[in-house]
Length: 167
Image (cartoon, rainbow, N blue to C red):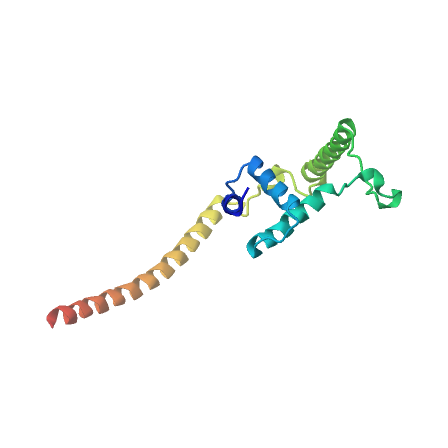
């Protein structure tokens, strides 16, 4: 291969369009030409030389010393994980039931029965009627006070309307 063909294949290589065969040709070209190359190809020779050296380096787990090996924990077996999960589920169910019993047990409530809660404040129905009439009269008097104030505001609004429309 001449330099022109090498440059064309190199351009394809840099664009990522080269085939494996063309890359092998480049590797063989740079490995088999120890003579001086043009400067742009000289830099590329170093790159392919690096790739060649790295491909020869063998990384083998057997060659590592015993202390250098990583200790890998084996994952729990499926059954062991299932048992651990089920124990947590049983504990959660037990706590839920215990909380339900403690919260909703009627023996723990300090409430009186419903019959004891319903008591009359007045023994005589006439007294109850009079008290109700008195409470309603007080309510009506207070509502009428508010109604008087609203009537004053209505007069003010009418005067404001006259001023706005009069101009």
